[in-house]
Length: 273
Image (cartoon, rainbow, N blue to C red; front, side, top):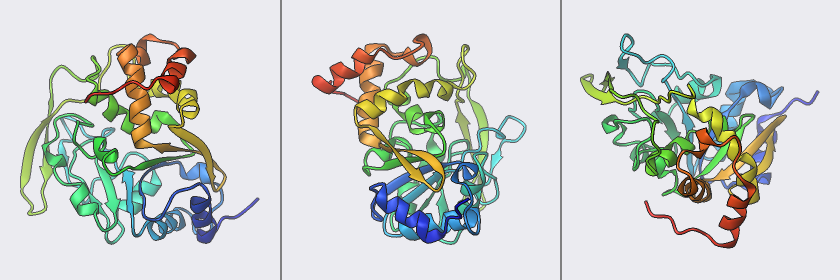
């Protein structure tokens, strides 16, 4: 069984075609990475060293525990519900965390603090103009380490831009966000909800082969993990083209017709936000 070192992981990042100056959002499964010398701390070290001059981001979601009863979000102490790597990363020196009460991100790099501003004003999980949507503006890569598009939060942001129906609760939930000065800011947040599918993201893998075929994503490896490297802009274009054909196809279609991708490749659809 191979044991991966920090240098092994950094070399693999280089080989998959990402630059240390890139903006990258990383969703991860530590278990899928295999045997890493030093465990998850080494993985975080590798990411932070490799992307030190770029913009390194990981999801630090809290949607699983935030509720009407557990309604105060303290970005300094609230654990993420998405695994060990985000929880180690969010506590590292120099890392900043956005103030979104359910779909926050942690970020590291010269422009990290600027990037996360304003999330305390969000009223939906991944609003247009928010941190998740703005992955396009920074030409971000999205690296899925040992997970699939079921964990690709950016697709929620695409759905919000295209105003896909039946994605939110009828009424918002009131949360309080602990601000940097210690004060509490009250916000009202619509939650993800669909009457047919409890977790909409469970349908996102329907796009996996289409993303490969259109160049929006490619297969790569990190440690033992099978990974998917995506281009945020291309992902937005391809997903948007599919949603324009049938706005609720993630729910209504058992699979996305292959011809929909072929048409997009041959005759790109001009997308309007």
